[in-house]
Length: 412
Figure 1: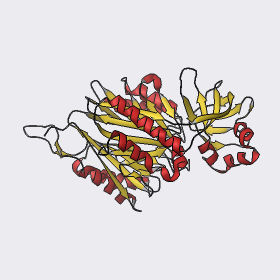
Figure 2: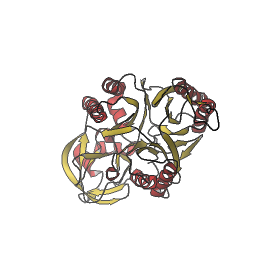
Figure 3: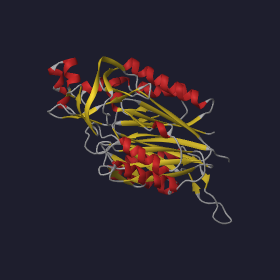
Figure 4: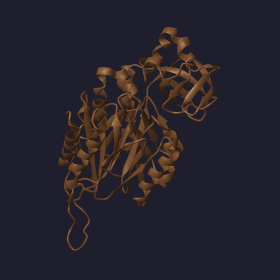
């Protein structure tokens, strides 16, 4: 039987981390066709159901036990499958948004593609080096043309932009790179990245795909500017000190008043910042990138998930559930246009926790919209996290906030 690209998704739930991971992986593998590994002698190799496993798990679970359960289930029919993924702030699958804590596993297999995984550690000390180490490891396991990559990283302790730049450099080939930043249910304390049978923290993991395939993705946010523009007058890394020479928090204080400003100090990602992130204007791009504050200091300095460059303009941004869902339609339609008649075999959705809070009980509608446009029979796996990565070209190495990323894999 000739098999090109096959994908299947499984979901595991319950209080037992090991069992949830195992059940999710077993369900994903159960939906995969068996294939023969390349022969090592005169006879064909053993039956193998998956070459790669993407794992997205709730922070509710013991992370080590969760990934051990996945690896245990994979041992029987996918023992050398590349396992990558991360912890979340909510899980997505073909079933929709998981209201309960869950583990989502996507199995991937092809008779014509090569899959390779990688890991880079110590993102706190040197995020670019962590990304480069991961990219090199991924690249070393691949050969040939037409490669693409998925990357999952930690932005609580290190710069997502620096990690992405390193990953692209280490990968060693000109390839589209997509992915996202892990979550921990808005605690902003410690996120986890999965590689093989272990859960790591402060790391970068990646999956490389090489061979005859087509992959594409797009990230959109759907927020509009309000209020007047402010100039970034002091910034350092991910810490924004001042706008127009005033404390960075003044952009909220002047628009909403002192009472609202206090909310920024009460939560890691307060409702105010979720509803009104900052929009960052770029001189060389038409779109506006969103940036969410994740911590506020008494002096008015705000720490963001991604750096905000000196000397650029920022605005408060606003959206609502209706516009948010319209954005999903636009993004899915654009992906369908790029597919140009190809049938998607797998869809990965990486969604901002900002959008999850904005949509509330309507969050399930996102998956429904994607299925309506891209196909109800296409397996979907994904998660809510702290950033979205859409680097369709090396020069577009962008880390987004507040956006939904839709990535598809198809045959050429």
